[in-house]
Every structure is written in structure tokens, then in C-alpha cells.
Length: 219
Image (cartoon, rainbow, N blue to C red; front, side, top):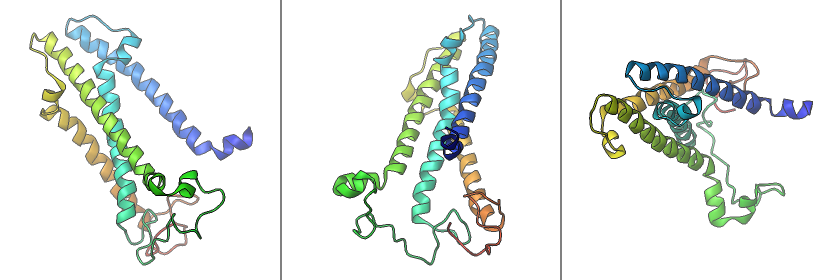
């Protein structure tokens, strides 16, 4: 068990932190939202009811949306573009020899789609970006639905007619929520790409070795 925990420590800590922060967000969001409802003269929600509210769904999925967009775009862009000196980039002067259809690269324990070939292989060799962009699309839709529900709570409190998802997606409010997260994600990616050319973190897979020249690229 200790070895299993050690071999999976990075994923366990990451998902553990995610769970802790999500629970914390839901609890403080619940109290904050009930304060807003009280200000509007509306009844407070139970915790379970809050988890299904537009306020919680919108706040949560608009952040997931930007994260999945960032990672999906990053995966695709690093397959197409290079940055000299960054360990986040493929070496610019070396050909990419990753050809899963090459019999010399296929091993006995290669994933099943590699042995199967054809459409299964084509989907598998792009499965990471497909999954990330699929999660982005799902989060985008949930953000839209949650944002519409939250907008309608405020409209009901003010005696205004409700809006639909098709109408809400055309509002500046919806796109302000999305774009403020998207721009920050790509800023962080850009800083990581350029920062890893000149800066180091000993022992990190995201960093070049401390003694590596600034001009070297790749892992």
C-alpha cells in the first residue's frame, strides 16, 4: 500500500486538493448566496438545494471550462508549434519519430488500439485532446445553463421576465465570465513556456535539469 501511494502520489494529492477546495467553495458559496437571497427578500436554500442552484453550477463550471480549454489547446499547440529553449516544447531541430503505425515502435504491451490500427488507432492517438475539448464543451454548456438559472433568480426578484439560454449566451455578462478566465489561463501557459527557458526547479518534470543550457529544448 505504501508503494502504491508513492507511485500515485501526484494524482492523489492533486485530486485530494481538488476535493477539499471544492467542498470549501461550496460551503462558503452557500453562506454567501443565502446572504444575497436574504437581501433580495427570498427564502434561503438548504445546502443540497444550493449544490443544484445556478449560482454554484455557474461559478464552478465557468472555471472548469477555462481549465479544459487551456489544457486542450496546450496539448494541440505543443504538437504543432515549438519554442526554442522550453522543456514544454518538442526540440525544434529534431523530427518527431512518434509513429504508432511503425511496426518497429509497437511493443507487446502497447495499448490495444495501437495493435488494432485503423480508426481505433486514429482516435486513440488524438484521445487526450478529444477528451479535454469534450470536457470543455460540457463545461461550457453547464456554465451557460447555470448562468441562465442564476440570471433568472435575479430577474424574478426584480419582477422582470425570465431569459433563455439562447438569449443569455448573447449577453456581455456571459462572455465576460468566460473571457476573464480564458485570458488568465493562457497568460499562465505563456509564462510557463517562457519561464522554463531561463528558470529551473530541481527535481520537477516540468523543468529542465539545473545545468542544462537555456537553448536546449525538450525533456
